[in-house]
Amino acid sequence: MTYDYEYFKKEIMALTTIDLNSYKEKQMKRRIDTLIDKHQISGYDSYVKALKTDKELFDEFINYITINVSEFYRNPEQWKLLDENVIPELIQKFGKNLKVWSAACSTGDEPYSLVMALSRHIPLNQIKIYATDLDKQVIAKAKTGLYSAKSIAAVPDDFKKKYFTQVGPSYKIADEIKARVEFKEHNLLKDTYPTDYDLIVCRNVLIYFTEEAKDEVYRKFCASLKKGGILFIGSTEQIISHKDVGFDRKSSFFYVKPM
Image (tube, rainbow, N blue to C red; front, side, top):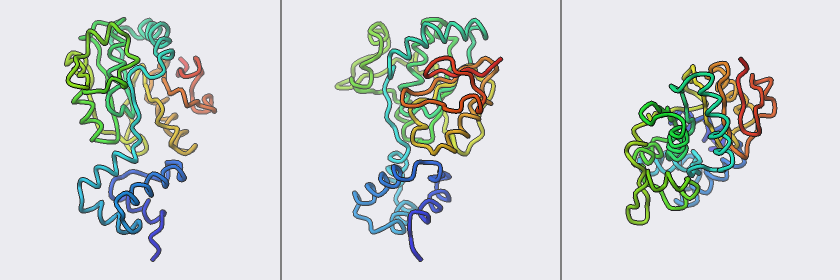
């Protein structure tokens, strides 16, 4: 039997429920091959066997293939638009008890940024963010709430002073911000989507997905939003067939579900 990449994808699906067919093959295969070479493992079959028996190796694999590049207030000009335009519009439509989902939230930079952004408009104790990611390791990091100086560089100065405490070379986010976020594991390609949301934020994740997988996720996001709800995506992304998926385009990175 030839233990090729097709075999590997089937084994990973059985082992983790992660469908590697939904990721761009060239990029993903290169990442996995790099990982196999790093451990000097001879081929996909041996690597699968090792993943089944070595928890550390398994955790490293999950963390490596679920691409986690994140920072607070990434692309500040888009967060400015969210603050000045999108949040006030949502409050006008739905009131101050907004339902917000940070999907593929990585290490928590994004949902915590959302709490701070919303706090300019809504009392902190009224804010609740539902944050999900496929990778339990990054969720654990998010709950710890320790970040590098680079990660928090774009945070507005008043929030930096108010909500971050330096701990050695790192910065710890305040418990009052952490308390506003509920973290859960969720697989965008497999699990049922929550519903009735006013705002969904999913940024710089779907660029790694195939066009078919992207289309499916955007349709599900649309179904998860209330009419008039908004999807906020990343600066490297655009929904080319947004009308077919069910959205109207509000601006470059904001899409609205028609009323």
